[in-house]
Length: 170
Picture 1 (tube, one colour):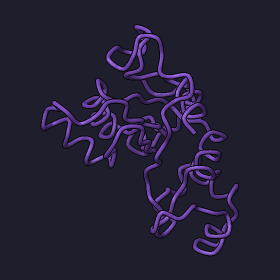
Picture 2: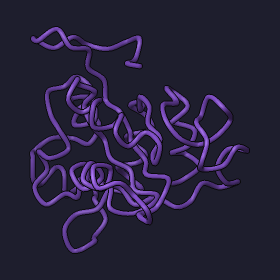
Picture 3: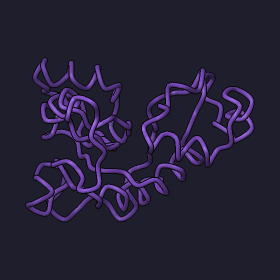
Picture 4: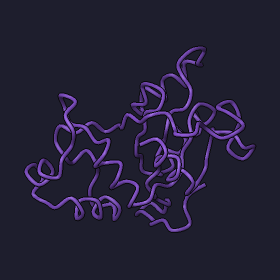
């Protein structure tokens, strides 16, 4: 389930940045699933977060796999997502000037530091760690939001194909 090109941490775990998108709503959820969504800060449909693919976060993501979709995000897609849908407190857009002012680094350098596991999105003070996205242009896959991605649905693990979905949702 982890990416082919991942970096191993000191504990021997494979690491990669995973994008997790909530696909289904809140009605009729098991309390454990509802709690996992709250832990991940996926409060509503079409919210997206970035998590480090460690063993603990993968366990949490596996709990919500029937209500969300996830996969390895690319550096280019993350840069576009941060520019277009990144927000700071007060629901103001995240700008390159704000990043430069708060953490004294360039936007592209920050993106490369995130993908080399030197920084996190939380390092920018006042940034919202989730992204609000639009429903995907052209809709979800033919199987709908109640079937797994392997069965031509929208749920579960989709690997690198998450980048195409995020592009359609921006």
